[in-house]
Length: 157
Image (cartoon, rainbow, N blue to C red; front, side, top):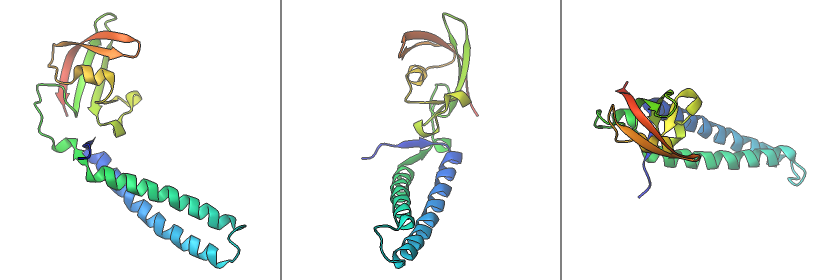
């Protein structure tokens, strides 16, 4: 069974729109390939080869999106224990050693963007906080070694 793909409703809708646009592009590329083929000698027809290459890339992305969307679990619709850190939660945690605080929203891997405060649930840091409650301390096994944090705030928006 394929693995679930977690995504927010906003990202899901963006992927559906991207898929629609790619299908329109696929039709347009088919027309361009047909027109280029009608020009004769395909060995030296740059437009034909460029359109064929773009078509191949487009078909791969269409297949990828269709697969992802088939297995999508919209995080906005999930029923989770909101007293624990789960996908969709916004968590603020504190580095026990330095006292620095960080706030992230836990998201699926496709939406992850730590610079924008979006942390993949598959990351080492998120793995440490998943299932924790406000006030809990946890250890995250980071590339530089284990670090201890305290979950200081947990909310679902």
